[in-house]
Image (cartoon, rainbow, N blue to C red; front, top):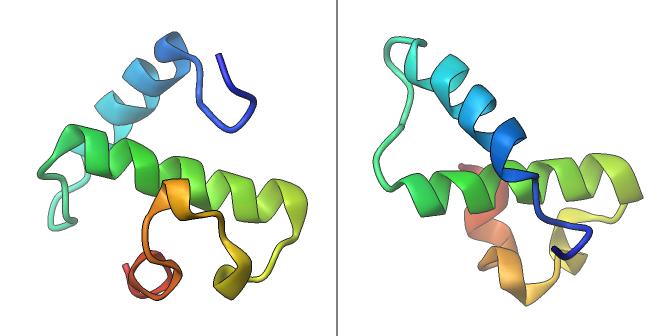
Length: 65
């Protein structure tokens, strides 16, 4: 498993917590996971949003979300 991916067990637990929060965007489980992993990547590496790798999607879209 690549280093930027969350372990499946961690994701299942985190997704359950996110799903319990009312009023936030939750559709598209894979897109939500990619967003959470992008945020974790930025926090872990300190990279600027504009320099986010393409595998996470368009940097401006991830930043706005």
